[in-house]
Image (tube, rainbow, N blue to C red; front, side, top):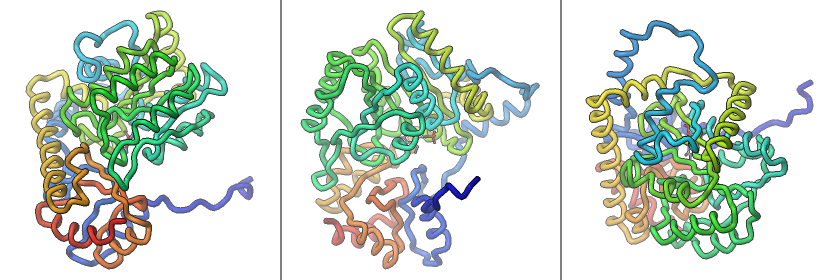
Length: 389
Ligand code: PMP
């Protein structure tokens, strides 16, 4: 049976975790895996999450099955945060809980593939490396458009729009909602408006990947691009992750919404999402979504979550500014948002930084800004600046 399988290379980032763990040098710097870290390099459980877990421990009376749509209260309570008060609860929005943002993206792709055999999806270059296997796994044809030039640290907006002008009606366009992974680059107001206009005019369907809401410019600000696209286009999908903004990573907390042309079309699309979900994971894991629901149901826990989210975002912004001030080569960091920056390191430079200086980053030159600290940032800049292309 299994002789037909070929050996697979180890996952680059997981390999990096092991190398970093086994590195005995005291000053090693981990800028690899995409998780938030505090000044001590730790990724602690949020206080709001701990409080919600206490409440669940005391009050949860059953672990019996929920439906394929998961925790309905969780989905409803997220709607005003993502879509705004006006759009929340709209009959043109149909949402279901999913196992993380990854599950939401896969479910979106499966729904598109079912609805439109031969469907195509456009992704920017570069994008989160998991996007391609997620979409290809559902049978979508993947097309790419230019997005970001690491050398100039600028979005290649003209080239991106030119490529998308050649998209066909019904093509899906993947858009990072905020804090682009791996580049941190964001469309400005005019660019966002132009993209929304193009999608609407050419009948393209945005699939918005919103995995870092609140970690870029702020909860409201980070939803701006998504809301603009949803307002401009009749049909859209939005894949959401609570794994970063609630620090729930391993609990796998996400949701997928479809926006249909009418309430009836939305209902049919949502029903199809549930059928697909039943055939993959049956129902999503409960604990993380229940935590988010318990927080969002209680104003005092919402306030605590906001404060903790603000603290994470402020720390990232401070480090971005410090990095940008430290050397002209890092000036782009101040314009960009969220945890990531993509620096023009050659693969050899990435290896040299790791082997000679104990500085760990993804092979493509992506750094996790949150892995820097007030203490280690200077050492990073001294070692890294001479190696930039
Ligand atoms: N989209 C992007 C752009 C991401 O960076 C990530 C996580 N790295 C996800 C989606 C998926 O998040 P989750 O861990 O919730 O599956």
